[in-house]
Structure formats: structure tokens, C-alpha cells
Image 1 (cartoon, rainbow, N blue to C red):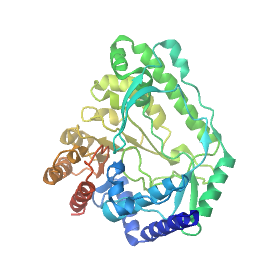
Image 2: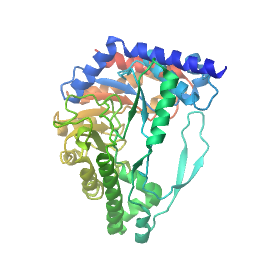
Image 3: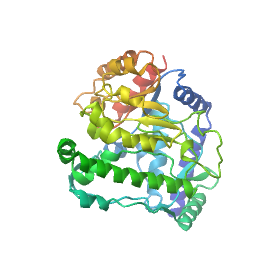
Image 4: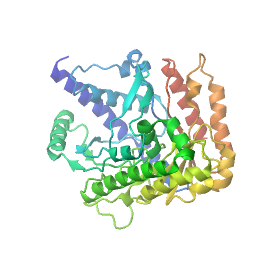
Length: 413
């Protein structure tokens, strides 16, 4: 294809996205998310993400890329995935009539460089990692640097001009600053220290871990402050998923006093997780993770907590999180126990086990049983069903299609 033909293809795909975005069903989905996020759900909401596209992209005509130019290929890929999800994967993902791109921001890295060994990924793109310790003792803590955020305005302008020239009048082009704030302090730290080392140091060197987390928390807080002071924060964009859950549409954000010319952290969703602490005691979780995470989450208007760690034995800690609205209910969580303690105060962000896709045979009835069981055990809690962390579907895209149809049928009953 010539360059002109490739650009025409992009416009064609963008026009198809705009057509789907204009359908009344998008507004119905937005109403559903708003109701859920205000703890007045019309029904459970459904989202699927983190799909191993590489396993089947070359087998599906609608996903097969045609552009050759490096600048156009990832844009084509994103457009095709949006269209495939909207047409084939029944869920509540909202399709917006816009193409969003990030401001060109630098200086928000903390360091040190991650040293790792990886195994070559298969078609799914999932890698196995082995991290080499870069922080071993107190002097190494200084390797975590305080950020110095800056905006490359020329770079942002150049990107905007390129995209506007590419899309023409098919999709409006809009830029965004930081808008998805996720403090996964221990997920980051164990890449620099090692998982075994951290879990051992909880007993052997607690003062070292406190100093390490203090330094990282200060760096994160400094970065957030600079985003706010420099006017870089993006509009609280609700279509993007919040935390490890669904869309953030809500009438509660932005907060009173909102000024679109000076967006604040309190106008945004925030969140945190400490997955590596999944099996530590509630007391240790609070001492080494939650007390620092609360410092960060206190700056946001609404918060989401958790990812893969089971939280049913730590629900009393969740009551300490300011403006907490959503909690991750992982595959390893005792749903009924969590629901009994939550007493309707949060949205349960259910994560069905993605292992259902990985077997020699796809057991759809068993997957359906899990979804129904989770909703039943939630005891009337507001719920969303989030299928994610899908490492493989064994190259069979139909498994995703069938699972979504099954789950969507259940949540719409």
C-alpha cells in the first residue's frame, strides 16, 4: 500500500469508530457506570482487558494489520482492537468519539534502572522476569531520585499536528495529562530489591523497609505535586478504567470548586495496591504498605484499592482509606466473607480466574458457574465483573467471544 492508501485506511477505521461512538448504547453504558460508581447500580457492569492479541491477530481478518509505516501501524492496531471489542466482545466498554494522546512529559521517573533477565515471550506477549537487586542496603536507598517533571510542549504540539493531519475530520484529537494515578509501591520496589528479600526483611530489617518505602512515597508525592502545580493534570477522563477495574464515569468528580484551567488531584480517581503482601498479616500490611498508600490516596476524590491480593481478611483496613469506592475482589478472595464485612459501602470489582481460558478444552459452563457464584456471594453489593490478566486463550479467539456473551447475558438478567 502507498502512504496515501495507508492514511485513507486509518481514516476509514476512525470513521467506523466514530460511527459506533454515536450509537445510543454508549450513553446507556455511561449511565450504567455512573449508577454503579455512585453505589446505586442498575446491574453489574462488565469489562474485558489485557487480552493476548498476538495469539490470534493474524487469524482474524478484522485484526490483521495492513499499514507498513512505523508511525501508522500502532494506530491501526489500536483502532482495529477497539472495533473488534465493540463488535465481537460483548461488554460495557464505552467507545468515545475522540482520539486521545498523552502530553509529552518527562522527568517523572524515580530510578534506579531495573536489572532483569527475561524469557522470550510467546505469541501472547507475556514475559517471565527475574529481577536483580539494585537496592540492598541503606546507602542504596538514595538511588530513588526525586522527580523533576517537565512538559515538552514542542513535542506535544508536533504530535497533535501529526494526528490532526492523519485523522482529518473523522475523529477529534485531544491531548491528556496524567489522569490515571496508581500507587503500586511494593510492586515497584521488589523489582529493585527482590521479592524474597522484602518478605524476609519484614522480620529481619523492618527499619530498612520503612526507610525504603518512605523514600519512594516522598518521590511519588513530589511527582503528583509537580503535576498539579505545573497544570499538567488531564481532565478526569472517565472512559479509562480506574485502578484495576472498570470505567470511572461518575457525577461525584470533579469535586466542587473545579476549574478546567487548573485541574486538581482531588478531581481525579486514585488507587493503590500491595500485591506482594497478599499473604502477610493485616498488621504488617497496614504498617509497611497501607499507611504510606493512604498518604497518596488522600489526595484524590475517589479511590480504588487492590489488584490480585486477596483482601477478605483485611476489609477492616479498607475502612481507613479516604473516599474508597472500589475494592478488587481477586480470584483468591473469599467473596462472602468480604461482603459480610463491607456492608454495601464499596463496589466489588470482581476478577474471575482467567485460567479458564488456558486448558486444552474451554469449560464454559464452569466459567459461568464462577461468575454466578461471585455475584450470589456478594450479597447485594454493587458489582463489576472485570476479566483481565489473560495470559493465553490457546490461540482460540472464540473462547473470549463465548465468555463475554455468557457474562453479558448474566449481568443483564
